[in-house]
View 1 (tube, rainbow, N blue to C red):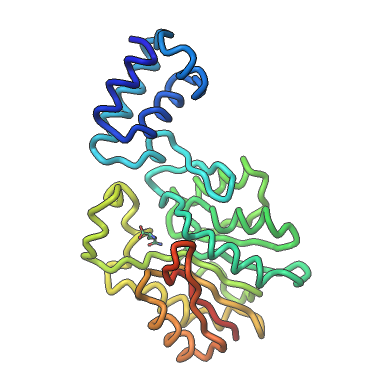
View 2: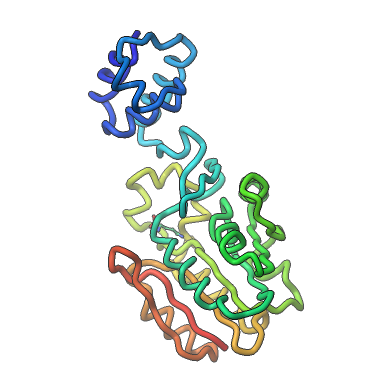
Length: 270
Ligand code: GLN
């Protein structure tokens, strides 16, 4: 089997770009190698890996879980089925958080439900003055996040627990979260590889606002005066989020769109 033959066979079954990238991951060849030397033989173990990945991709498994990594804000994060795969729309949360941190000396922030750690680690790397804590209920997710922080050289204080539970008595300048916000039974959960992702990271098992309600209710006990809460949510949850924030005593509740123009992040301050 040559590189060219392997690629041609896979292209009939999966997306062309996925096929090429999987062949590169399996063989260690570059895109230039594939173009310049399609007659190069693929050694048996590499071909076996490639064929296995193609079959799993045909069955709908997300690309990131096959190769065990995904990119976010220019950094490569390791992922496993214990964590949600990074989504580009979460960049909005990072940009808004950085804007709130600007000008504060040694701000304290916490990321609730950190998963692979992308939010906490990106903020730690991009705002080195910040003291960053991150928590998750899942020990498996925390293992992935700790590994990512170590590999990327980010200083993050990871803790295990249910939302604010491990933070009794602590106050922050900023609380950020990308919580599960898809409603139970939403048809979206059956599409686009979502069945392979951790259910606890996607849905609250209720109306989609259960975790958001909990975070908003408990955040005032953990924010300094003037501190901000920012969280990601679904395209139709902006108004409900602002109402919940205002009812909990927050000021200046606002909603911000992602790069696709969809309502994606809401926030307010004490
Ligand atoms: N944006 C994700 C999706 O709809 C959901 C992420 C989340 O629940 N935090 O696929």
